[in-house]
Amino acid sequence: MPDKQLLHLVIGGELKDVQDVEFRNLSEVEFVGAFPSYAEAWKAWKAKAQATVDNAHARYFIIHAHRLLDPSEDTDHH
Image (cartoon, rainbow, N blue to C red; front, side, top):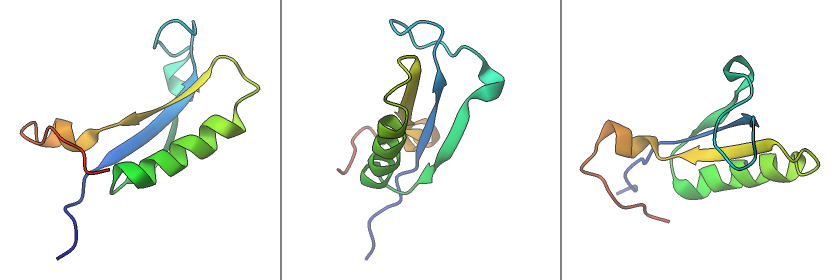
């Protein structure tokens, strides 16, 4: 039986301040993709983080969307 899908979203863009998580312009936030596991999301996150390493204000994040859809799901299967 396949593992349960655990929806993860990867988004990112330029932050106003690197000490905070507030995007400079929400209309320019990039939706990288939706992934069925943390491991798959992490691969996409890492690729984006490495591609934007020269931009100090660029940050990408993994959103554990499965937790938002089903709050009883409080653990990740890495």
